[in-house]
Image (cartoon, rainbow over all chains, first blue to last red; front, side, top):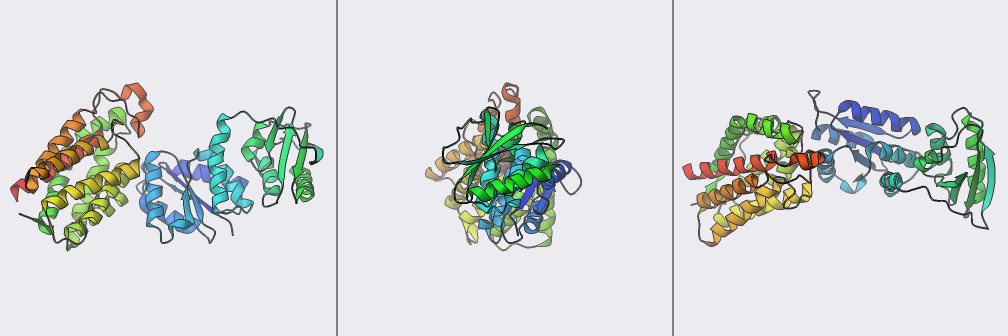
Length: 223
Length: 211
């Protein structure tokens, strides 16, 4: 049972497209598209959003993402009118990046607050330069060569991020001079690691060894 | 004099008619600085309300406003649905179970509506939104009440305040909603939401003067 997502958009096709894209990274997460008006026009339909909330909430809550201002209002109204509003949260996040980040977090077992933070954090990542953090001396680290065709592209990045979700370890992936939090699909994509490149993965925390083993297995499974 | 449930229904029917008559004007304003659907959306919302109120007979002014709010939320589709919906919901909550509106209750309801719209849309004065019509409307209504005005006079003052506030949005650069994407190009056109707020309040005032 994972946190669900609801994509609220003025356009039915946009909502479906975002749900499709996010769903590719997180096949088991309930993602509901709530876009457009019943007559096929552009707009947000309150009933459609309410129905989507019910469908996406399968026990662990659901995060709503929206495209433009009035979609946010409709989303907030639907949450306020829900029987248990605390099971839902509207994310202030860019729609596409936020949905992808939220989907991956949900697939990794994050709770409602965790999925919400992943979506919101996707917005903050966009403006900031990737940090170059030096590895701490007590980190465990491994080097891995990407031998799959597309390198650390969207799907592999999602697999890698999922592999460490739920573990008690801080896992950092370095490529050249850049580093990324292994839980952040967007940060991993930002490394632009291609086929043949070497990445260094370091971890510390109680589950560090487990995390590195999982990452090794995930990278092995890419190709 | 008070204002019973039948008077409220009559005022809202009159408002629906005014929105019908001004649909094209609102569409034109919204086409210039928005997505062009404000007139059509509001018309659909109010027409659906008229159908709904024909079918059911709300018992109190508050119940009528709640019916209007839920109809607008369900059928408008654009920002006006959640904004007006929340505004009328808050107005209804302010009135409570009162069988008749009194002059102070009318002013309280307007204040509640303004608070609801601000909470939902997070707009401030000068953002070029319906808030720019509602704030002077509430101020004028409160001032009229202090001078001992009755309901028709209070609503007339509110309508005049809203009309002036709406007209004052013309030179503003939008900071909220779809028009904000236009930046400087949003200046020179009246905000459609402020305009529809002024139209609604004038319709309420005219209806109150007739009853």
